[in-house]
Image 1 (cartoon, one colour):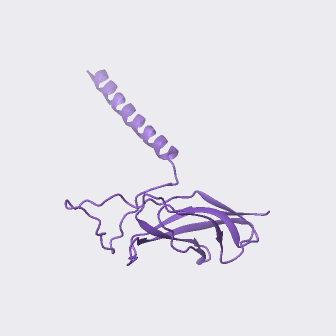
Image 2 (cartoon, helix red, strand yellow):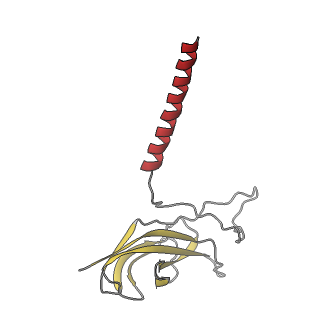
Image 3 (cartoon, helix red, strand yellow):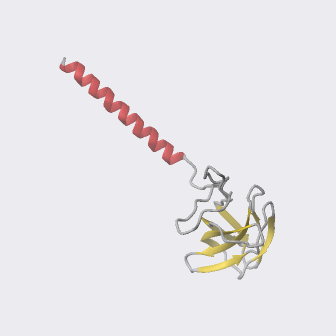
Length: 163
């Protein structure tokens, strides 16, 4: 009888260890950068008027993510693809923010849904190196009022390479 209890306890311990190992492997191998997500509403903002009769909100805002952005050193004019996915129903304004120096080095004009920017002009030339970068998305309704909506911040790395 004691041997049977020991075997049962051993099986339970092995199942728990296997579940813990599986969870650890999943958490270690999942993607660390999000490429698209539905931006959540901040608590201090009102919900949009795009709610239907049942109160459910229409599809969220698609926000492109970046693991890194690579630009050449010593120039303000750089090639970077910025996009507002066409399924969005808001305008984007995209800014590049350097958290280490508390400095914004780029702010776009409004980008309509489906529009791409390929060439941008930074506010300053960057020296070669790697910098933490926050890509800030501000969103506005695509109507005459252009009411600010929820936004998002994507953290990535700015890689500035010598030519």
